[in-house]
Length: 465
Image (tube, rainbow, N blue to C red; front, side):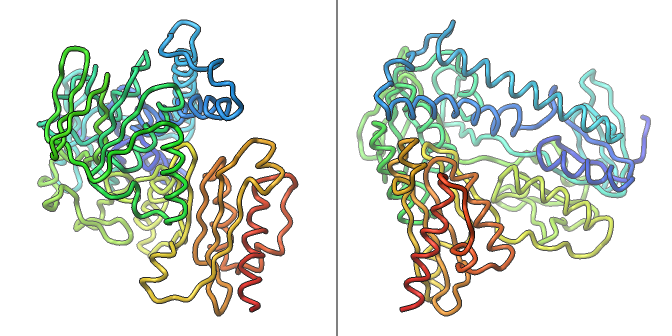
């Protein structure tokens, strides 16, 4: 069995793995990137982030037309040839293929060795690779970075069939819209898909065991989201648990723990994801997963074996493509310098529901729990010229600032382009700018970014009292 040696081996070609490999190559290290799937890009590009966001764009356009009384001109109820869904699916595939081609070109230009196959530890410094043709190789490395991602949680009690009972991967392969959809879960994936299908004319019901969706969100933002979901016609069954799920012909039947019966054409099970550790043979590297299936890492993403790092979804929360990219870059820097890496500061968090949600820093609830005095500045998209032009009625921005210093403590946004707008606040917080800086800044007119000035001036009025 032949064995090559690399300075750095990266397992997984998703956002974190790409970033780690490119950083290592840029620093002159012999780098290998191992990918078990036929296509590069991981879940993010092939079956998750990019596909779902591409389809979301079609749903968002429908929701915008609906706001202007034009829904009947865009809803297609499942027509494929020449229909709205067919065009959305085709567009999604073109985006994936374009992004994959760019990624391949970037990796090859950097001199990274691409290694197709499934990786498993033979010993702490050696990975055994099972190639697609069945042959096996052993590859050695000084540093190994695991970025193998995660997969949808699929309990044995749920009769997944890729036809009517779906997970967040298989639902993206639909070629025709169902008349009705039942979503189990109240987290990010469940909410994103619920608001993706409802604007396309699908009757959506969402079931979750908690009192509120996304309970960690700012309460004002959460209220707007829940109201918007109801305005879309989404029926929320909160504090409700599924007892059993079954197929009944072309329908899916769900019986709740309280004895209610819910039916739909299709069901999406969206309760969590699991790390892809199964095939890695962690024991061969002297690593052990905890009772929940995760391997412990330190602040620098090192495992108990200092030369083995874990990043991205495989490392757990926040499980975002953007943070995975930064984790990959910083893991390589740490591995090659043995110095603590600089903290990345406040992260921009986003949920691509309709409407979009985004935030950075702390919520009012968290500040109250810590006993911190603060003021709240508010701004509504509908009060801006831009908001009125685009018909954004419910968009909202909230700025939290320290009572005694004006320090920015948190920024929360719901509405169109929230995931873009948040970066202004994130950069201000990471540069230790106070709320006075947001108030004194000039924003293009007409834009939604003007809300920063409105909310900041609202804070300053309270601080001057």
